[in-house]
Structures are given as C-alpha cells and as structure tokens.
Length: 78
Image (cartoon, rainbow, N blue to C red):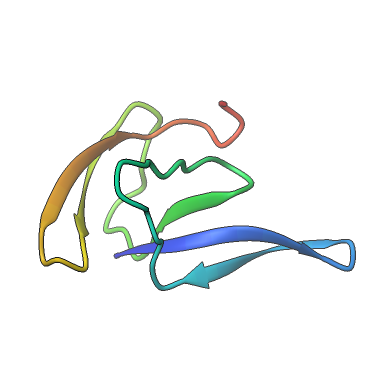
C-alpha cells in the first residue's frame, strides 16, 4: 500500500501528515523529496534494500493510470 504524506512543522515540532490527493496543474510537475511531499510504502511483505526497484501505479481523477518504477535510496540522499 502506498500513501501520500507531507512533512509539516507546527510549534517547533515536525510531523508527517497523510494527504488524500495532490493537485498537479496542467503542464506542471510534482516533486517528491525527503522533508516535503513523499510517498510512504506500508505493509511491505519484505524489507526494501537500497537499489531495489518498486513499481507504483498512480491513478488520476480522469481515470488514467501511470506506472512509475522508483529506485529505493537512502533518506539522506538528495
């Protein structure tokens, strides 16, 4: 299962907040990075290793889908 999250700071504390959807205007892109918007993989059957490929299918409000393969990397990698 994949969830969208964003990192927010409130009163000096940093926490992750689950978000249901991300609005991407036409001809624009969405950027995911540690400390901002990110995908969280939950309930994995096996642990992931740096370098593993993970396929994720995005579903758009139009009904279109897009499969993207992500490479697992360290959270400290920019």
